Length: 265
View (spheres, rainbow, N blue to C red):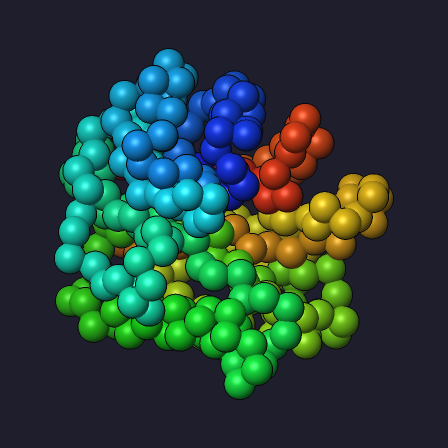
């Protein structure tokens, strides 16, 4: 079973790119972030035509939004916090039916945090830190988790090799010490980094390249903002990961590329 995650940066604008993703990765489940579409306007028929009969989505006009598209039956899970009390459609969880039993799948879109890495002067950065702290506390308070996967645009590059220059990005939002420490603490509530299970921590690995880079591939000033985590009981089921770097060259490309992990389940 292949689970893919992608910050699509507007579902309706990039709906044709979903067909490209399906052709390239053939995912069983596709988790989207930053869909930017209200639930009433979600293009469900077009998604079903791509082979995903099971759809869950939580969206709002112009901003944020998450969706889970699945070839397998899913049931939306409830009982989660209204993260930071904002009601801004940054999380969706489902029970995913697999041959090995149900799996809990969480799709997150963590706040970007603005430009200034100071919570005292930048409310967006304060929101980001509060969001990851609340997520850490929530998962830390759960009974021992099993068969659980977290995916999404977590908007933080935690390792030195998750950015093109650790030294130059230490004071740039997405790689500052408060963010990387916060994300690591969340990961350590009971998960392993499934992509780094395959890609050594010493190796640079990116999933996002700014639109400001005229030749993004030549400069390669990327960051790894998109993640797949799994509970340790799923380690024997991990089979491969694909970071679809070529998607950054698609027409009307997102600045993020899809990331997929394959499980035996």
